[in-house]
Length: 410
Image (cartoon, rainbow, N blue to C red; front, side):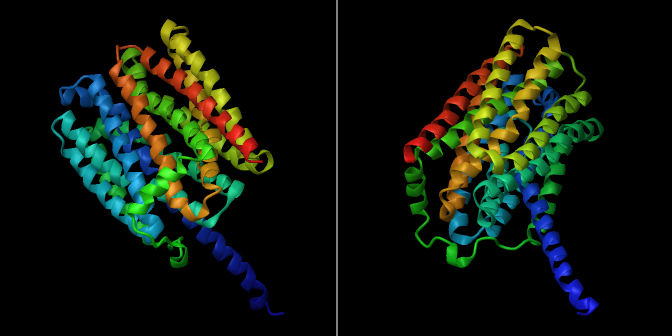
């Protein structure tokens, strides 16, 4: 056998590996648009409130507005992608994201900012929901959960760097420059999208009218397992967005943490997310998605109770908030990937619709978390603390519903 013949298989393997990692990088970037759309401007929220003449509660509604667009948009993109493929809807979504980000940069009032944030979210959600569907196009079961964990771990670099970079951009060029940066990132993502293949073959696409997608959504909601998986992720996301909306004011305004250091506290939670996602990727095939999901939700509930007590009593000051929040946020690696992969596992032919439905429920619940923190804002961390604690209870109950539904189906 010649040297060239011996090397050809290795070259083929190397080429396949390179393509796989390239695809992984692009999908991770697309999933990251949910995080960077908000995490970039978190440290600038107090400054934005002053410049736009709004109080902290109104500025926190820019997060709720984003979640409205993000949750509803997923239902639309999921249905379109099952019929027309993944790449075209993602490209259109990124274009909307660019327009919405530019609108945010030009906003002169908090009301205008909220409207542009909704449009920005309608675009950003396409990349997030369809990158998950693309994973399901290529992988199944625990392997899909493993790949989702890997994707989430890789894309977690975005929220890790987001607040740090955002605070520096705001300090150097003002908070509006943060949104112009998002415009540039959106354009770069469109370029990256053109370099990856379509993952949904024509023969696997749905041929029924788009209106039928909404009937499919209604039918999917009759399945207890999907409700359990989606609910576990939804209550967890509600707590997460209470954390995202509440910590800038809890840390910076209440505990007087300098804005440039907020990113370090926020980044610690992202490191926790990366670690637990990598651990989940290694353990999920051995212990199963459901078992790890239940353990994760119980840990989240324990952290939520400790946080609520500390937020109410101001026990241990800043550290009394930071440590239980760190534990709660880190559990993301055991809850999110497993809840999404579990919901999609039984419906490969509707991966786009299931991913969209689960994502809409999860991010839609974030409206409640961030909205409640804004509604009950009183200048203390207490609203954030009790919202996270209550949502963590719901998270556990839904995870137990998955177990109950699985036993019933056997």
